[in-house]
Image 1: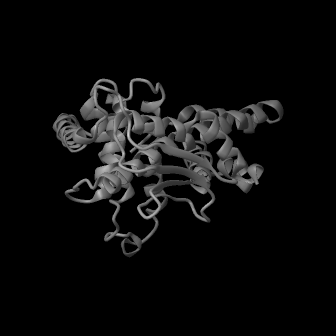
Image 2 (image 1 turned 135 degrees about the vertical axis):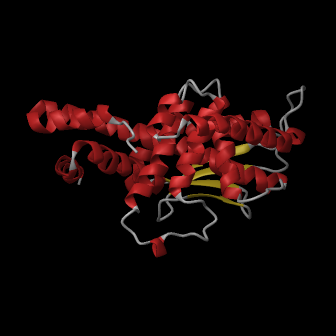
Image 3 (image 1 turned 120 degrees about the horizontal axis):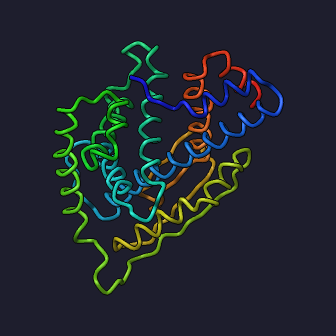
Length: 285
């Protein structure tokens, strides 16, 4: 499978060969693209964890793996958000993130894969997401499906997969929807804690208002029975989670750094070549 991410990688190659100003400009391009990639994943991750929050706070039934179910909800929201012009890019980057995480683990033996995890394998999550994307909008995402080598028959079947998932989530959430009077339930509080060494990621989250946008989306759509907090903080690991005991969705700054490095080193490096990727990594250190 060949996912095309040629722009940043090609620019990086040219810059490193030319040296000087061109190299700095190339690094700037990759930095900006890597930050976009990390923030796009943050958008998807927040919606994923909000899915867990809705299941927990509203007491929703879940058939099958909850992780798969909220992956689907996050994808549906991003596909149907007409106000966020970046939502489709967030979907593509989130899928690519799962794909390249899977690529990084292919050197492991089968015994190293967590087959009993609550999550499906990363590669499955990537392909499931792309199937929903092409199922909902076959023309808009036909190039994405092609890059993932999903054949036309499967693309056609993805249409029903998306329809079934969208109908199921709509049915589940309809009783909790904000009514015609527009009266909302409990509020969602957004908190940014000290970011330490991850300050540039905290600033990117704030500048793009990712947590605030997600909070407003939920409050404008659903009536929550109790107050909820969206918190960005240092966790000591790359993670994001919903805490049912605290009624909190937590996004860890370390996760943004992890996705930033995935793009700048692994994805760009896969296109630009190992030598160039090593040079970029060394410069960043």
